[in-house]
Every structure is written in C-alpha cells, then in structure tokens.
Image (cartoon, rainbow, N blue to C red; front, side, top):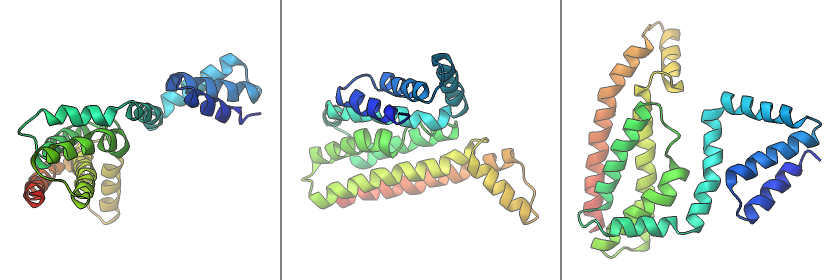
Length: 215
C-alpha cells in the first residue's frame, strides 16, 4: 500500500493536474498508507522540505518544465529570439554565460541548468538565432546544442567558487590543508574572481569563433 503514492503521481500527471498538488497528494497518500496520521504526514513533509529544500527544488521544477514544453515553450522561445536582429548563437550564449556566472557566484545554482533552461529555452533560442542568418544543417544544430550545454557547465564551474558556502570551496580548503597549506574560505573566494573573469574571456572568444564557424 505504501507504493500508492506512485500511482497517484502517474494518474495526476496523466490528467495534467497541478504538479505541486500531485506531489503533495502522493506524499499524503503514502504517509497515511504507512500508518501515519494526516498531521504527522504534513509535519514530516514540512521537515523534509525545510531540511532538503535546495535539493528538492529541482524535482519540483522538472515536471513543470515538462508541461510547459508540451504546451509550446520551445516554440515561444524561438519566436522571441527571431524578432531580435542582432542576435547570434555566440552573443546569446555569452549573455547567458554572464547571467549564469553571476547567479552561481550568489549561490543560486539551482535556478538554471541543463534541464531547467538549456534544453527548453537557451538551445532553441540559439538555434533560432542561427536560422535567421544562415542555413542550419543537422550537424550545426547539434553543435549549437552542445555549445549551449558547455556554456552552462563552464560558467557554473568557474562561478560557484566565488560563493563561500559551496562544496567545492570546502573541498579545495580540505585538500590544501592536508598538504600543509592553510587558506581561509574567504581567500579562496576572492581568488576565484579573476579565475571566473578569465573563464569569461576565454569562453567568450570561443563563442565568437563559434559564430564564425557557422557561416
């Protein structure tokens, strides 16, 4: 009976009900089936959300992204960028790179990513920008999608180290201390800033060359 929550999720999404309501209903059904009172289930849900809110956000967002895609999100994104004459894949991805680095530096890593923004929004917009200017072959379409994904990876990798409370900072600090080098997390964050700027310049140059290779 405790697996009834899976059935609730399947039925809820099949009927296109509100994703958040479906997830909550599945949690309540599972808890009641396991012998908990409704109040105990609500308390457990609240405690779990408060403890793992940063991890669980992605799992709440993904069903919403799927529904938006089903109802034309990619087509709207393509239409939006098609009206901007100066847009090219390289310029668009450079703007996204800056946005992603800034948000990662503030610790807001989960608000964008491969599933949340690259596949449904950024890659279709970059393809639309290319289609306005040049004939787009299947190979170049795949190259644009790959470059969009790479832009997200590189920007987050070099941007998140600026934020103090991130696992990579603690990993670097621990590794250096084991080898006899004592540094503060704040010092690591400060020195991550020029590294992030260098990554922006290098990747920006790559995107500029990428535009030229599509012509």
